Image 1: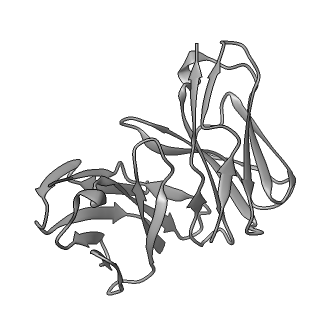
Image 2: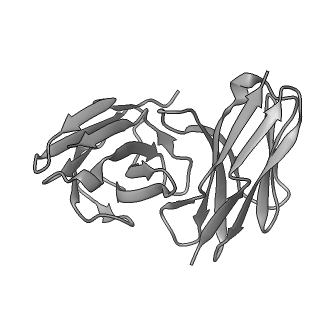
Length: 110
Length: 112
């Protein structure tokens, strides 16, 4: 069965303190891995799509990387407005639907 | 920019009522999806549609039905609402099944 696991469940950082969120997956074949940001009470907002191992994408203070078993979302010098839940999802070979992880709740203290 | 809108942000309904949740996208996307999101359970797929009048069951279709009469509109129907359907409902769309899904703002449904 395809599975996506995100860690940690929750992470609290000080403003400016860089860190990484992890998304590990066990799937039959990866067609794409997606990162979303979700603010409380709102729908997920698309951040990145990664398709193959070694690929990297960047946007402002965020950088997503992909290996054959996991993806990392690196956050550099975060600000309080980066506080949100970050969701990872994978699309597998032969499937038409995403498999989501449980998310990492990130809090950045000023 | 992709725009996915949902008809209501908040809804309060009584047990046994028929409930309609509407979703509209303005990007001519082929695929549309309905999820529910619950604490500790994450996002779970209810139904999806890859073409007008076509639908496929997701992981938790029981108690729900859908309608897609026009390409831009995908409706989720709770035939007889129950308290265990209290949840956040999210609609999404994508150009192709393998491409990025874009989400609407969500509808928080409370069934009393």
